[in-house]
Length: 455
Image 1 (tube, one colour):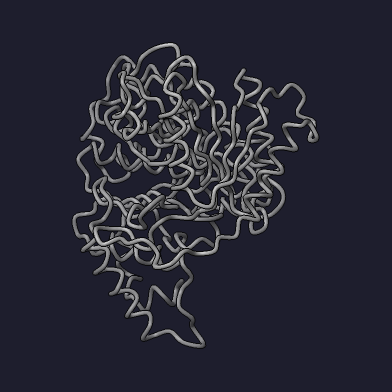
Image 2 (image 1 turned 180 degrees about the horizontal axis):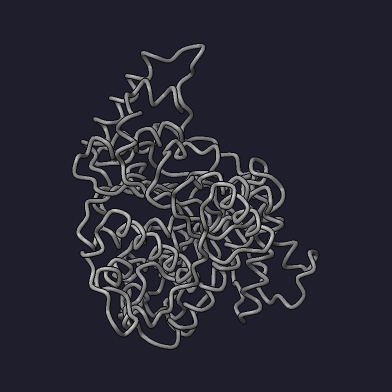
């Protein structure tokens, strides 16, 4: 990375960035989103770099809360690409995908002269992550730690925590959330070696929000919000901007903090999306097809996702709600729409989902498995479908289906699971959604609540 920064003449510009740097296994993207939204609500120009994106790579680069414009993205992309192409070769290859995107983020945030704060989410690990070229961030945070990317980070929490602790810097305040004991001891030891204290932040007390909801749904988000509040407050303090906020006497957060937490938005994290196409064709005012989106891809995240889905679908059935939490009807089918990368172990992920849902009294009526296959080659106004029908390998999706059906038959020891066994494999996500829409239209007396997991 050092050589790439030199080629792009970014060594000095990134030292001027006022960075909030966040690592972790779960919740680091949400924490970054909350922190950025708080600081933006305090009147600062913000840059936010997160991963992954759902639809368009520009989602990874936000300026003042909005995805970077297509015009700016293209300009910065080709400037970096062409400069690197000229200076790289056999000795120094072109940077890998994520490294290039991190370099692009540094270029964007450095060139946008009005950016007061850059909030950076670590891509993977911490110590060797592309974002860790920032030597003097204003503040660092480490969100919840767990088992993920074990083929790279190690097979124990001690090893994983050691990698995450790599973002800690001498003289830079650091915060984390409650962690498993073995992970916490590693974080504290690394902080001690650097001569800094790492402060443990409790989950945010909902009463501090003065009856305002968090912009990101799920009980687990109070943990991420608490960490974001600490990071934002420390950034303001170290930059000499505490005068921007008014601290209240009765223990609630400053108005700017409450606003920032309530308007924070990050697609694909505990997100509820009613299908308006089916709704427009429905005779009553309900939402017969509702998608509950979450990108959970670790055992711990699957459990959190299952708890959220169980809670919110029960809540939706009990009472009407706004568009963000639509009422789906009492007679509802619970459907899983799922895919995961082959580096994940479905025999760990799917049991955690089923077990947790079963404990909450929720059963799945159907499961659909799809590949990451779209109808389009390019996004934007000139998008077009592929020129010819592509042969799609569904062997992995068939394997997922087999794991699911084995679990339901009790071969993996899931006693008490009451989900029915119907499952289907589709050749693409659009074909699965088409089937769901047709099913909803044909059975309007029954609504479909679809948990859309790790696609």
